[in-house]
Image (cartoon, rainbow, N blue to C red; front, side, top):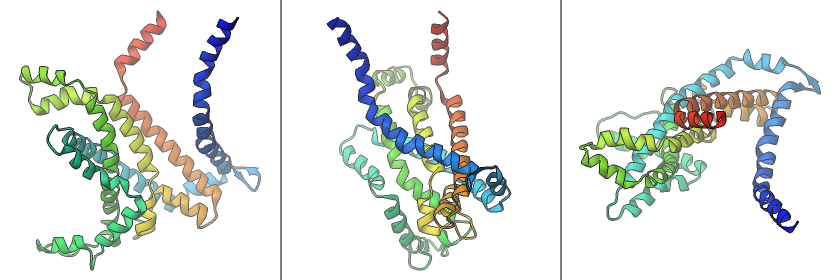
Length: 296
């Protein structure tokens, strides 16, 4: 009897340990999503689709939607690529690499608000250090954040400068887990550096890359702090991403149903992009082996 009780305790123990984390997920993730979904369908206590109709007829919404798509098509692969290159650099076994690694990680230690303010000063079209530097090469002053054609891409650069350092650490951890004997075998077989990266490093980093792509997608689609701090969605609505539009609808115009609809569109967009990423980067061989195991 005592043996059976101890077995039951062992089975229950893992669930008890994950209960606090699971409770926080329900409280701060699942519950807000459910309340947002309900708010998007209810207006004055009545269930209706009028808010969806109003939002989907709004040109401001569609402008924000295409800006969100455009910026993430560029920013997600750009950040993952730069992070991968940075991880390869800091993975080198040379003297002083720890200091170099720390310097490359420093941008992420600053909050995005502080980073945005600092870059706003540097990108000032009249007195910013960036324009002063460009002037040394005879390049005329650039508008950056006040230019409708440059503002969005300036924010992409700022967000990438901060975010790449963070994603670099995950990729570096993945590189550290690759057995060095595999690289030694490749060198003996005559594989050059590029062939080693393509044939060995990338396939063995597939799971880490999948995580980085998924997490990066979620973070960037919901990104709005630089837009809020630097441009407020301008100039001419060129940086008014969907998340910023949802924030403004809820807290500036007190239109929570409209904000809830936009947030649900964002969540649906994230799910669709992540599904594509899992399809392209998921481990197909593992799925096949799992299917065969279940059949047996």
